[in-house]
Image 1 (spheres, rainbow, N blue to C red):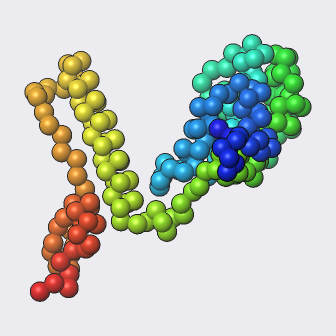
Image 2 (cartoon, rainbow, N blue to C red):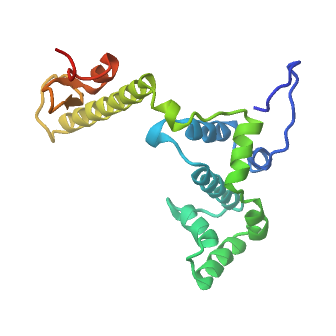
Image 3 (cartoon, one colour):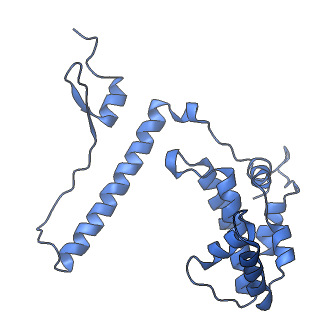
Length: 210
């Protein structure tokens, strides 16, 4: 969504990424996904360069689909690599271009629409007013606890679903069950042991206490 001025009126900020999202019919949700991936915590976060590659691959997929070119899983990513990777031979790049052109894709136009990481940054920070909190801020105890709890819940969900499927398909013998997912820390100096979340919340182990 374009930002608003002090009077609540929508301001149009020139953004190549926003224009291409509309022209290629990628949908507002795709812009939301880019922002969510850039502002995510820890390992879930994508860099601007990764987002630029993701965006460009999506452009290629949309152009191919519009031309009626059917691609199997991973093929569009490989075509993008063949068009853009410096290590690709000239023959392989020419072959990839020919395949797209024979399907009716304007490859010159497509390559001209590919965006840089700077364009992604401008789109996120100026067009969408998104902000990324640096790692020093992310390392705050409350943020670390939130990240750990989210990851723990994900592990719990995957484990529960997997065990249930194995049991229901006869590949595992298991009655009604409860899952316990925890990561504990044992301090070898003082001998205290706490769950990671408990350790963070209490501010440390028993070292230094009488």
